Each structure stands twice: as structure tokens, then as C-alpha cells.
Amino acid sequence: GAVVSQHPSRVICKSGTSVKIECRSLDFQATTMFWYRQFPKKSLMLMATSNEGSKATYEQGVEKDKFLINHASLTLSTLTVTSAHPEDSSFYICSARSWDTNEQFFGPGTRLTVL
Amino acid sequence: SQQGEEDPQALSIQEGENATMNCSYKTSINNLQWYRQNSGRGLVHLILIRSNEREKHSGRLRVTLDTSKKSSSLLITASRAADTASYFCATRGGGNKLTFGTGTQLKVEL
Image 1 (cartoon, rainbow over the protein chains, first blue to last red):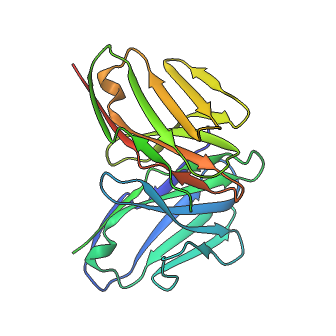
Image 2 (tube, rainbow over the protein chains, first blue to last red):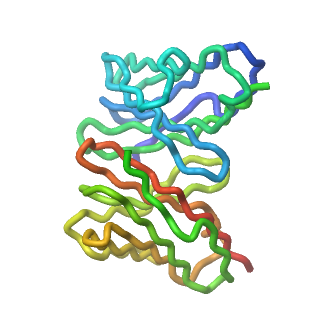
């Protein structure tokens, strides 16, 4: 089956630093990738949708300059949390949609803790 | 954006019992999907039901969809301790984006 990986799985950083999270589709090409954020015991909230080679589309209330998304290839998207603060601590999940089947597959998530 | 509501928010049952979770949504959909999430992990796709389907089965899972009421239910029969997880419904609408429900935390006790 289709696999989406995320790296790192966990990251702890100091307030003010930037953190980059990678999302890769391992055995399929993804024209569209999605980034979600999840707070403890809460639902997944879509942050942004990125299409390969173009700018990401952010959901209302999500700061573009805070959460930088780059979808440089059909198998890789990155989310950079810039100048992270404790309130950015969360579980970030990426998802990739296969260009040929239109199915959407989810990564295992990245736990970000900002001290 | 549409946000599904799920109930109950939390459900605790004994192993062997059936677990039923409900999901309601607000706008028209192309399909509705159910996902499972173990604590601190990613999502596992369980089942998809299209808007023109009313019921679907997969192993111990049974999903119903009532588009007139904008609701769906997930039934897990003969539950096992390993079924303990959070369960989310997600709808795909005209914008082709998946929107998740609030989730039900299921605990199956031995």
C-alpha cells in the first residue's frame, strides 16, 4: 500500500527557533499534499494545501509567514514552523493525495514541543 | 468550513460488546470516510462510503450513511481491547478537501 513518511517523528526545540518537518510519499507521486494540526484529544484541523510547484493555499486563520510550506517535488513537501513558540506545540500530520488514484494517505505525524 | 460533529465524545465498553459512533455533517458531500487513530499516531483509513450508498461492511465494521439527515454511523461488532483508539469521520465535499469530525475516543476494557 501507499506509504507516507514524516521526519522527524518528534522534535523538541527552544522558543524562537525554526523547525522543518518533511513529508514524503514513498511509493507514489503526490500532486497535492496537505498539512494538518492536531491538539491533544482534538480533531485534525487543515492548515494548508500545497500543490507541487506552486504556492500553498492556507486555511483561514493560519499564518503564512509562520508556517512555511514548500512542495518542491511530487514526493516531498516541507513545513517550516518559523520562530516557534510554546503555543505552536502540537501534533502535525501531513497527507498526500495520489495523482493517479486520487486516494489520500496520511503520514504518522510529528510531535513538536517548543520549550 | 464544514466540521463534523461526532458523538459520543468518549465511549467505554467491555470487550465483546458492540460500539456505535455517530457523525453528523453540515454540507453536501461526495463521500464520507472513517479513520482510526491510536494515541500519538497517524491516521489509519478504515472505510469509505459514497454519497449514493446507504450501508457498507468491512470485517467487523459496519457503516451507514443517511444523506437526508447528514449523518453516518460506525458500528464495531465484537469489540476487542485492540480496538481502543480515537475514531474520526471525514467528509469530502465539493472543494475536494477532507474535513474531519471531532472524534470519538473508544476504550475497550478487558
